[in-house]
Length: 287
Image 1: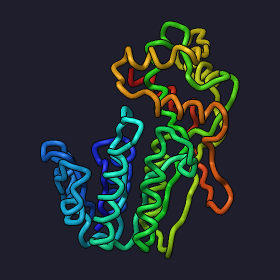
Image 2: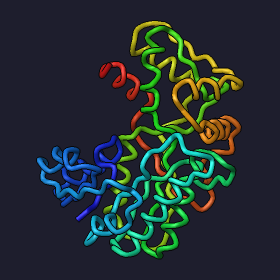
Image 3: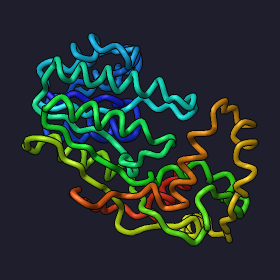
Image 4: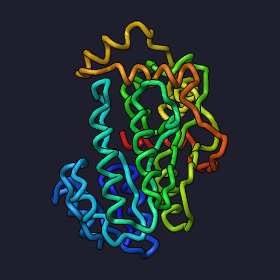
């Protein structure tokens, strides 16, 4: 049995679907029973865990697993102490230690090793806590998700996308969620001991200018990328409803200044096959 958290999301859904297509038994963890109905109809067992900090419920859901795919619940508006992520990481590690599955694949992130304060510090909390369990754990450090560009589609239709990644001609590592999900499913079927760090990127690096060009090709119109002035970020984020934009701003600074990147030394590296151009076409086609 393979247990998949985040099965109602993009990456977790691909992990669960890939395993099912391979004829393997899957237990999908969901926050409420209604969200698990579609997976149950596909033949999955379903475990309902409403609270990601409930270590006992997580341990019961992980029980008997040959492998667990673990994701952190997304929380982009945390207070600077990142208390929610610390609690979730501690609960997940406690549950993993109690259930003792055959192996664990954590969806981590590029920059997980960075110690400076930023939104991605959650990954360091999870990686440290899981490594301390002594079980076989793979930290899948994925690059910036290409699918984040879906937020820019309305602006692209108007001919101009604003970018927090800057300068707009600077390329960074990106990867599609399809490659992330398939790689995680592959890892769950591998055998190893100890802790592995696996860096996952797409076929090449991409810049905001590349995103604009991809949207232009898919939309059949001119699209340009423009940098959103750094001094306006906090006001913009607060206007969008964020109460604690500090961690998000620090993360973006990390990407732009280069201190959020792959560690490389001592890590494995894998490369996905899905291009940014293909993802952008799909975003446009889906509308």
